[in-house]
Length: 121
Image 1 (cartoon, helix red, strand yellow):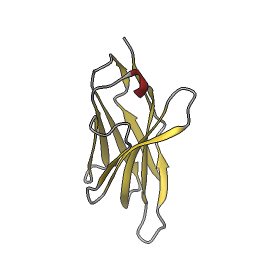
Image 2: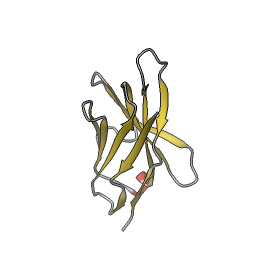
Image 3: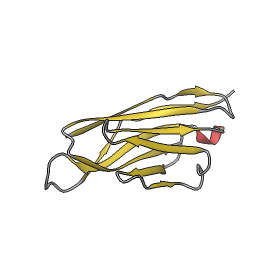
């Protein structure tokens, strides 16, 4: 099994910046993709950004140019640097990893419990 834990959430003023981190632990063989999602109050969970093990990145249009995803494959961590934050970015942010916990095993999805990000004066 793979466990994910997010950290770095908090309260930030509009226009500010924040960096989220996610650490994977447990039986990890390979994490092909690590990604961030978010769920705003009263809304469905939505995709934010992802990074493959080879370094390919992709962003949702709503965060492109403001958020930067990075990962450390050796440490099994992924970060999300967020800037120019607005109240519309307020949400619980979730880390997701797609990978396997042993050679030859079919990849599975793993989710963290989430970390709250609030953008407000």
